[in-house]
Amino acid sequence: MTEQQTTDNTVDKKIVSFLQSQTALTLATSINNEPYCSSCFYAYSDKLNLIVFKSSPETKHVIQGLENERVALSVLPDKLVTGKVQGIQLSGSFFRPDGEELAACQRVFYKKYPFAMAIGGELWAVRPKAIKFTDSTLGFGKKVLWEAADQH
Image 1 (cartoon, rainbow, N blue to C red):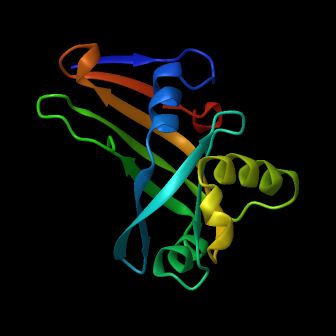
Image 2 (cartoon, rainbow, N blue to C red):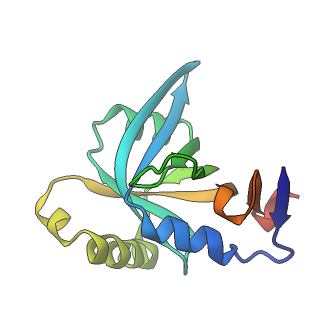
Image 3 (cartoon, rainbow, N blue to C red):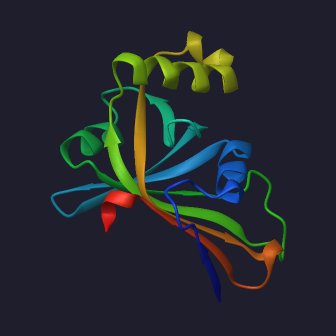
């Protein structure tokens, strides 16, 4: 297994490109030792380094995320190809954006999914703390890692 980690706090362009090119994530939340997974369409803001998705405040994953902000998520390619292993594993903090951050999240999300403006729900975000991108197209077992600077 080969690993590559950025030396500054910028997210590697391979991670950014992959996140921006896909559409669905699996979000894992947990409260009271009760884990839960949900699937959501998402958009990635490279400027804010945020994963943004839309969901109703009454959903189990939002309720759990608000109670316990520590979440994980994964992103697989929209189209799986046998023998080509790619994917994101990410841990971070769940929150409801507001103010300027909400405006930026709205721009990135509704640019990718304009039809979602007509669908109920609110925008939520995950601020990554650590990202692991596995990409066999870069070599067998190749992993690109990123960790937020404030984690050290």
